[in-house]
Length: 320
Image (cartoon, rainbow, N blue to C red; front, side, top):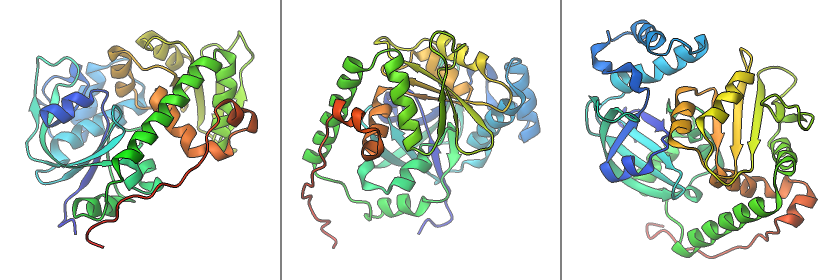
């Protein structure tokens, strides 16, 4: 079905760049033109360490690996899955251009041209596929659910009715408004801890007033890694300095999670991209998680954000 083509996943904070200019791009502007680096992973690691001398050793290998793959492993004709944050769609395209360095772009200078083939709602895919493309990595290979995305290109992944998407969007807007209205400061920390527990994490909330840059400590099981969680309920966008404070509280081997009701400034977005061990969740993504795990969160929170599950008929696939 895929004719030997790779399926890549990619994330960005600039949906308009990808969708309006038909490109995919990654950051790390301090690297300069990647085509001038010797085509080997070791050379990319050395160049990255030189460009970002304060980067942790593990971060050097991960980030340099993504840059190398973007230039030398991604091939013309490969497919790309891009989940856009602005409209909550899953966009699938074909790589049509070789690597290009755009020096004047200080945010996303490393680019490739792409032809977008399908724009589908997230509800057109199983939850496992959505988890896979929700990777912490900026660039990654889609493996476990690649067939789902290939199937969507050939017509197997149908779209839902427009009114369903409108209802879905209005529900997320309602959740965000209720979060902003009812959950401020420590109340939001308690709520996020409960949400993480419904997702299978063990959590400990730091003493109020003395969290030292970490509001919640979470573990997936009895073993590391440890996840330090910072929660902010402010209305304005999160600046880079706040994300840096979370990074400063992390020890070697830790992962970070920054949860905000708002969004992130461009500089903060760039910092998150350059530090893939920290995942940033904005208000829209938080609302999505609440919808996914709504039936498992504590009853008192369901009363504060009252939702009712409904079933709506959708158009059949004409090929059935």
